Image (cartoon, rainbow, N blue to C red; front, top):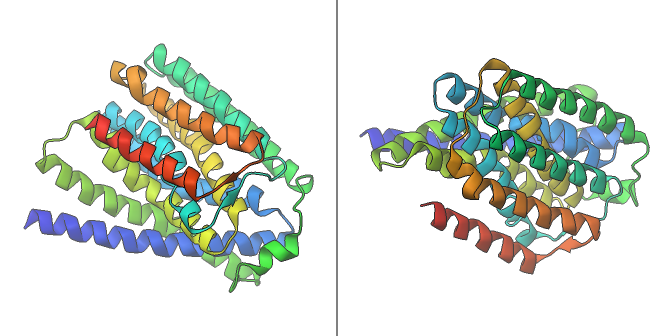
Length: 315
């Protein structure tokens, strides 16, 4: 009976996540169209912040409850899943271009922040002042991204927007879509994680592995749903920008805010393997962006094989 309840929680969570992802992407693309902000910038701010809310909830709660392995594992596992799974699946539907101007700066920042995170983990625990540093970088990033909205051009904004059918155009509707999306996503992720942890605990899986796999996958579902829907709308700008933005938010906002609330000890096992998988996958995405390449189905197959290979190794 408890297992059935957990399965029902998972199913209900998936419904919330899919609805929230659809509403958030439509609202964000509508905002982009009405305000002449390039979709890549909207993806890096509104969409990325909304889809990172589940990770923030899970990491702060687990760290304050005395489960630091889940807090760190959630961020590391989510960043791995974001690149290998969240990009790997949508490009099977529609190839994602990495040629947007301004994206290389964001991807380079992602690499720098990932390296800083690894250094912080090496000199664990992650303390208050380190959390303050991460949040300060986040604030600077948001200011720069907002100011850069006027100078990051699109090749053809109208052509890009025409692909997204049924976008809201009234400011009130756009706001409603975004708010409903942001509210639905953490609710759905909470149900998915709750049901998933209930199932995993009966299977005797360790705290760190739960954080890296099941919980990371559960909290990455909003990113997956938004990027799949963006791919269906053939809006690759939002898909790639959302992943880069989410990876930045996961480290800067989630770890930063969690470290402001409590010191976060780091299990040595993360430094031996998982952090380097996270960094390696980020490097691969960064190289695609630097070369202004297109992530096609072949690359997507490679990403997916890498992700499932990683899961097989940690289990």
